[in-house]
Length: 190
Image (cartoon, rainbow, N blue to C red):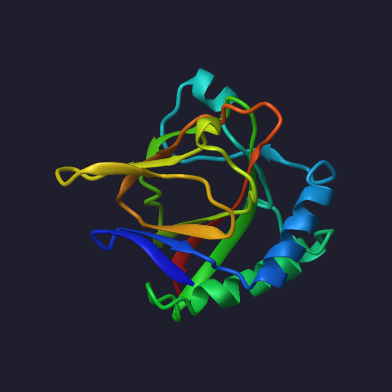
C-alpha cells in the first residue's frame, strides 16, 4: 500500500491496496458476474432532484443481507475488510465496515454530498477498473469549505478514504462500453 495523496487528513488516496493475486481474483469475479448480480439504484440520504435520481449509480448489497449472497461477494468483502482495517494511514482497528458493490454506467453520477449519516466516520471507495482513461469521467471531486478542491481519477487497485464532512461527488461516466466498478464502504465506530 502506497499513499499517493493526502488532503488535510480528510482524504487519502492509496495505491496498490490489495495483493496482486487477490486483486485479480476479485476483478475477474466481478467482471464475470456483474450481469448476474441484481444491481439496484443507489440509496442516498441527501436531497436530490428526480433527474439526479434517474442518473445515479447502481449498487449490489447496499440494503440486503449478504448471508445468502452468490458468487463469492461476501468472502471477497471479508478479505477486503481485513486489508483496509489494517491500512497504515487511517486507524480503523475499532471500526465496523458496511460494504457493497457499485456499478456506475454511462452518464450515471452522484451529486455533491458529505456522507455524514448516523455514526459514520469515513467512506471508502475502492476502484476495480484495470483500464480507465482520463476522458472517461467517473472522477471523485472534492472541496473543502475554505481550503481548496480537487479530484481523484479512477485507478485500478486504489482506494480513496474520505472523512465524513468533506463534500464530494462522482462525475458522470462518459464511456458507454466501460462502467466504473467499485466497492463502497461506510465505516462506523463500533
